[in-house]
Image (cartoon, rainbow over all chains, first blue to last red):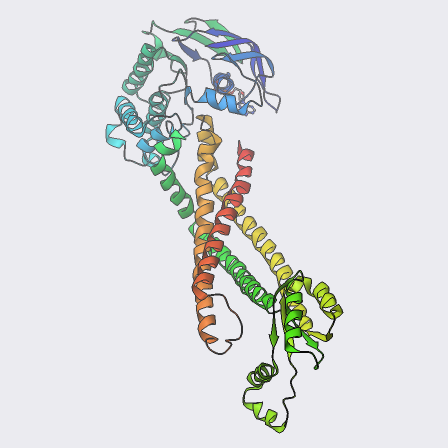
Length: 223
Length: 296
Ligand SMILES: Nc1ncnc2c1ncn2[C@@H]1O[C@H](COP(=O)(O)OP(=O)(O)OP(=O)(O)O)[C@@H](O)[C@H]1O
Ligand SMILES: [Mg+2]
């Protein structure tokens, strides 16, 4: 699913965000990426989504080499990915429901199915009551859950969730993690970044990567 | 294609949302394109009327060939047959002395009384030759060289002046049409660019979700078409009002000018304006869309 060999990422201003990243993630795996703020978690997800490109080394996602300039194939790849952005990237002026729909409209789903999937996803994240609310009127935690609903409703092969529990209370956070674990049943691969290591204590069916200052320091629960 | 069918409602809502999000500017651009297309409509109307006029007048191109007065009518008729064979001539006939006189009476109208002053009919019989204007020179030559023809007269000078005027109008018309096209394209692609800029965050998010360019761009093409079509509709209304009042004000006054039928003219102009707005709308939005790549 994901293969990284000696990947480096240096931003134009000279920041070395990632150094010598080597990864092999198999389909259906759930991987938690932990690490302090500024360690490079978001940067890693950006590479996987084709928002940034490795300055050195090679990276493959679902068999596709992630190199600059292949806009069309990267677009196609993105349709198989369910991203949850750290800053949500919801579309203002629209309802929670329409935001979830927006993630599916170009996937070739018939309207009936889109609506069902959107509703189910919103119910799953506990936003049944807020479907018709404009997203800018929702609380941060609610907006975060809309972002998660948008990602899972797409039935993607890969979920890239950046701090999906960052703004949630313990109960909602656990619920979201449970939802993200459940998609494993359809062989979806899930990458979740988080600061909240205390939530991960009881979790057994996942792998753990600890990133520090751009490098993978420990694989497994080593914080 | 499937995506478009599945999202008809969405695209419809999106189009109006983009228009409404910048309503005032869009209204002004409709007004602007409307007035520009109205200008285009006036030029097109002028051209259509001019073409009709020219076509009719070209049929009026004629040569009068005079033969010696001693010639027998039967011989003259043979000459007529000979003339009919010349290339570029589409009709020739003998105009007798009496007809010749009554033609002049018609022309003089109330002043025809002056003809009473002549004791004898001062008008000679002649051969009236209708030709295609383009072949005026060759026909003139050939007729002039025929045995029995004394001299020929033609109405070429008048026709050529008209042709020149209409030709000039066509050049001005072409320039105006060019200006109209370019102005509309500039206004429109600017509006589309602005729409794209105002929606850049949404566009960026859709990109990250893997939306194809066609999905992102389609509502903007619809906006472009909507704006020019509304402008085109405005222009059509204005031009039809103009044609209507024009025709009713010259009604009866200028019967000798061969105007095209009012219904046909209005129909043709309306179809033309709408077709031109469609093409310009499509082109303008595509130009505008080319800026979409810049805010990746
Ligand atoms: N576009 C950019 N240009 C320059 N430097 C950047 C850019 N994006 C991130 N960085 C830097 O790269 C490093 C890694 O940032 P990144 O966002 O990946 O951290 P993170 O682990 O996601 O942090 P957080 O937990 O706070 O979200 C940081 O030092 C950050 O300042
Ligand atoms: Mg981050």
